[in-house]
Image (tube, rainbow, N blue to C red; front, side):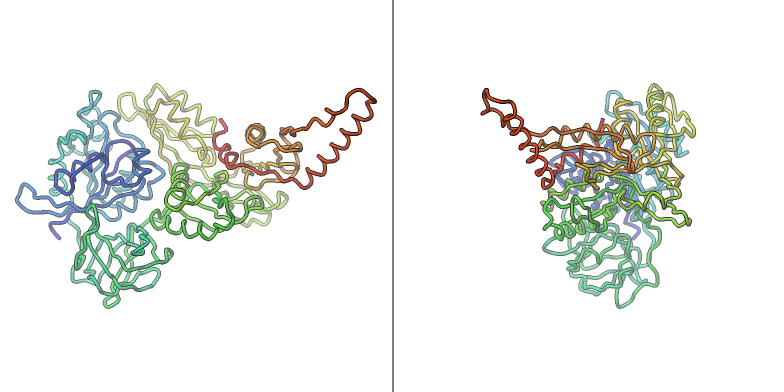
Length: 594
């Protein structure tokens, strides 16, 4: 066990984690690097250039002291929406490489990932990456890291993921500074599940870190929380592919395949133990996921409901931060209420449903959860505007507030403050991190940042602001339920909860947008926005008309009038039986109202 090191790479998005991981794999001759970001093996990750899943891989390295070491590396995502992946990876490690871009310096997600690692008592090795860039400022960035960590200047390693400079120093630092795993090989088996993958041939593959004891091939293993037992058909370690072994011992990171076919039987964060000699308690220190954004996901074809359930269960295995529960809508039929960590997360899940499971889905307007108090003082959590009790029963509604931390160059303070104050934010404080970089702290309602806040922040600051947040508390708020009516019928999938001050303008903009998107029919379609019984905005999609009077030439005007009257009756009848189809684009348009 003295020759094992488990560590992860943490950083802000786009600071070169995956490229540096490539150089580490190349240097230790683990794999032949044929293209960039070898660990990002999902098409989506390649297209967008971001890491979505954390990836574990084992390397073997002969150090300068002549000893051979086994290094288990986990490359983690940097985007705030995938911070749950980072927390799971941190739970399986003893140390972390903190990567900071030499051209950009310390950013918001760097700080929040660092605090997460410090909470788990990990040994931190600071690394400045991209020092080969012409606009690199390694000395200034070193000062920032020293201010953040309080470490010595000599502790910071300078490296480049592109040229491979400093890679050997990183590996030597991992061996000398990161402690080896502590555990007892002769104790009862105890392994922490930090991820799982669904394979249609082999069932569910569980990725785990063995904390104590040994898990052997062919022995019976038990999952602590679900109390189910299985035979470990195959155990092994993760290289670029899976490499089978006869046993996994304390301190090792590897996988177990036991032919489990039901997705709900595996929980990430659960403990695996042996049936013959079980451990007394589960492994501590694993945080529960808290979804921030909720949206309805409905199959376009109602017959696909069960397939959608199966697809979501398989996705949940691979992405434990997704939560879902069944719900139904008058307009869309049966579907699921899904909880996501953010808008990017929601977009990725929708894309993965399409690519990996061929599921065509409609996603409703995303919203957050509110606490609704009735006149008796009872509290109820509501994720969906249609779940609100009657207006007369409600005493008050509380909405979640987040504490946001924004790091930016001081030239952008004005526009960023205006953006946050327009979103009903309150400035708590601002402090200079170093030079001309400022950290701003705001309290903002979560519902205000759900839709387009991140995009606006990036465009205002020309990409130089970084943003991180965590939920702080619930506060009373004046919220109104905005309904959208088509020909007097409410479309529940388009209704939203919004602050009273925005409700009228938001309703007006939604009506205008829907007018562009809903195709014309043989009859007039009235699009209305209503708060309670009060209509606050209206647009009309004009009917498609046929010129019935074309054949009337000359003669009495009453003949024309008679034909038009007849047409009017037909249109009226048509309106009673005709129903308006809302296209998928309309549900998505609400997100991009600006």
